[in-house]
Image 1 (tube, chains in turn cyan, green):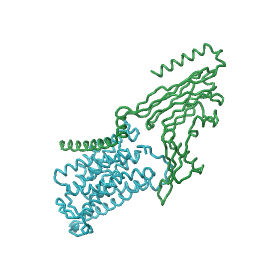
Image 2 (tube, chains in turn yellow, purple):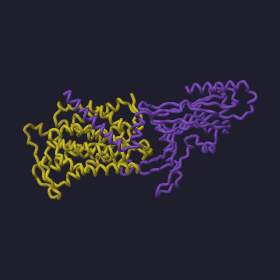
Image 3 (tube, rainbow over the protein chains, first blue to last red):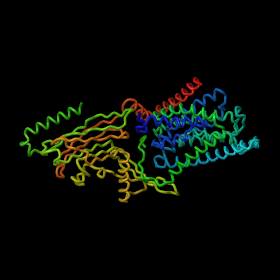
Image 4 (tube, one colour):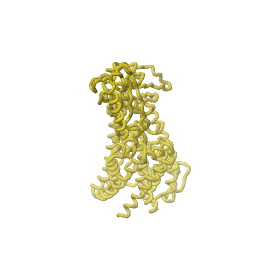
Amino acid sequence: MTLYLPIAEMSVSVLVYLALGAAVGFLSGLFGVGGGFLLTPLLMFLGIPPVVAVATGNAHVVASSVSGAVTHHRRNNVDVKMAVVMLAGGLVGTIVGVEMVRILRKAGLFEITMSLTYVTFLGVIGTLIMIEAVNAWRQVQQAGGAAPTRRSGRHGFADRLPFKMRFPRSKLYISVIPPFVIGMFIAFLSAIMGIGGGFVLVPAMIYLLRMPTAVVAGTSLLQIVFVAALATILHAVQNKTVDVVLALLLIVGGVIGAQFGTIASERLRAEQLRILLAALILMVAVRMAYDLVITPGDVYSLGSALGGA
Amino acid sequence: MRLWLGVLFLLALLTAQATHAEPSQLAKEDIEADASTRQVAITSSFTGTEILVFGAVENSQQLSPEAGTYDVVVVVEGALAPAVVRRKSRVGGLWINTEAMRFAPLPSYYAVASTRPVDEFADNAILDANQIGFEHIRMVPLEEAGARLTDPAKIADFKEALIRLKERERVYVKSEFGVSFIGRSLFRATISLPPNVPVGPLVARVYLFKEGKLLGQYKSRVMLEREGIERYLHDLAIGRPLTYGVVSVVLAAAAGLAAAFALRREA
């Protein structure tokens, strides 16, 4: 069964994209991540134009994060004040990011920029998660090994910045600049990579802002939902590259996959899961780096006419 | 339906001609043609289609379909659209788009079918004038600010690449023996429209050649339009992008919430 995608302007197999959605959903259920960093590159490998993959990826992020955000909010696991400060930054980052996509597309440099951003971020984050997870795993192996050292109460550069604000839910009294900048930066990445950015946002909130782990997931999800929603709308307006039919196909597949992913995750240990996640992230990074380095089959390419660019 | 009417009409024409073949011996030949479909709908189940272009040579002096007295060319063109061709080169180990050439609007889709390769029976002047064949499509590079297009070799390279890439995307199609005579005057050609055919009006041009001379031509139009939900979504996305964006977000959020709700009920 095939379906004609109204924005990508191509006829695709429904089953392939449902399966792709399910596979990404499975992994996101397994690892507790949004999976955008896998979805966008996979869409491109399947021949969806990169700009459509990124814009549609943002719509997919909305769907995959909204229920988590609502659940966490109900359980009072969200620092709304912090989320609002990060969102203010997110607003700026999204507007700049979407505009950047438009300019880069016009110059024919969008693909290379996106690929390089992917390779850099996935490479760095994948390596960090891998190192951390392998160490944790080793400590577990050496039964009775030293408990992981917690960095606590150390005062960093963030304390010397102005505009301090109280965040009662996180029990923090910090400058608004770091959360604003973090929100802005992740939103920028989100707009040009088609990801939610949870895998960058969560460690940033834990290690840079020193937020309590309990509220990190909910707060990051809330921020991601709004940033992704804004990015989707801006991509639709500026670049006209959001394919709603493709997004819904992926979401439906994702719902099914996520269910199995959650079940599978209960059978694996946290460190093992993180090692697998890191391996996956690194694989995507290597694959994208490979495409940048090998000699292309044809050095010529046609500029995309999609969205009237 | 339309096709059969057309065929019947042509058969009538044929028999009418056969009855007074002698007087028409010296009458000038001309051509008439039409497409089997005037309207192609792009719906959510669109996977490409074929259109049949058929016609007849008036006052045909051809003794049999195989005689090869006439050569017929069918060109089907899509709407004109600007094109950009980019060239990658290696920069610090990475392949990056470094050069680009913009072309003035040219056919977004171009299919050419003929009784035999066009350069065997027509000279370049005629082919250029009528834009018959990929190499004869008018492709005018646009001057870029600060970059003068003086290097003809470079222009030729980019033009060649443009044709090659369009061919690979199957939006430029050539069928050198795609037109066949099925009677002394009746001919037909099948033109395939791929799933990624650019949406817009198509123009079918049909040319009649004899011994290298252009005897007649005929033009016909085929509408290629989105219909149903495809049309609605596309019009919304282009015409009211803000509404489309908001609707996309609402749909995505609703789908996400509905899924979570459904799964919680099951658990």
